[in-house]
Amino acid sequence: IRYLKRALTARPTDLLLCRQLRSLLIREQLWLDLAHHIGHEAEYASDAHEQALLYLEQGEVFRDRVDAPRQAVEAWFRALELQPDNKPILVRLMDAYRSTGQWDASVKVLRKLASVEPAPKKRAQYMYAMAVIERDKFEDDDRALDSLDYALDLDPGFEKAYAALDALLIDGGDAARQDYYIRRMLARAIDAELSDDLVVELALRVGALNRDILGDDQAAYDAFRLALQRRPNEVALRRQVAELATVVGQLTAAARHQTILFEQSPDDPGPL
Image (tube, rainbow, N blue to C red; front, side, top):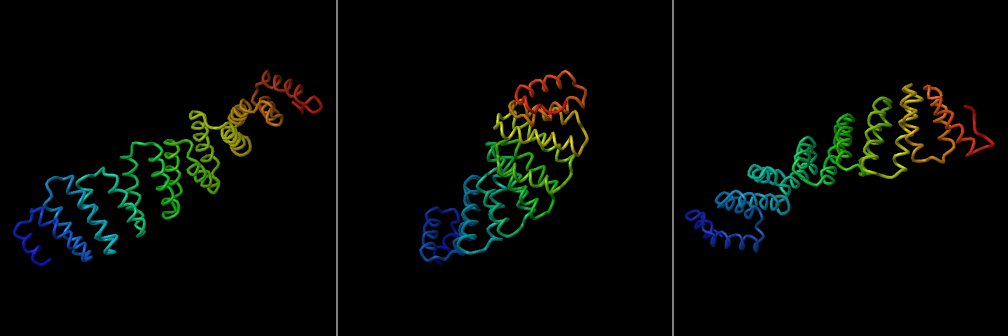
């Protein structure tokens, strides 16, 4: 090993010497020496792509063999400087930051990953991971809401993001904010042609918020009417639409709904 190191000092770009030393260090399990040797190979690499791959490998040796996460991050940063949009490098940095609790840095890397990822569903997963950190580590519900909202823009059927956003809205207790975000979820559900059950659930929530808390009877009427379009045979829902139609001055519509109610439930059409 000493001979090969001295030889490399004189001929640092000799590939045969580099390979011989690498093989010997691996055989002897001299992992710290191997990590430094890979750094030497990277320094004299022929192009930026090869250099980045070697720094990536160096970081893995530091992390997996030497148990030196700080040096691993430094190696991966050198690789990232050469290839700023390289996803494997970004993923390793993200994992390293999360394992050591460096949450600010984790969010920055996740944001970068989301910007370079072409697949919308994968980008949505990165935004969801950001939101979890923002919610649980930063205790910043507003930032988490924005990240989850963007995740659902990218993937309207992302159930975990939907559930997380919904939980934040319920815990927050701000009716106007709930109305804003639920309306956005409703619009996405319609545009993405998601299930009628989800559309109806969201429309009913918008309706109830506006009728019972925000005092916007017109908005409540529009929302309940949308739900009724998907559930025309639900008597209780049609009764609510009929009552709200009367409140907002849609008397012709109210009479029509009342007629249908009588046909659907002649024994109890309910008051107009």
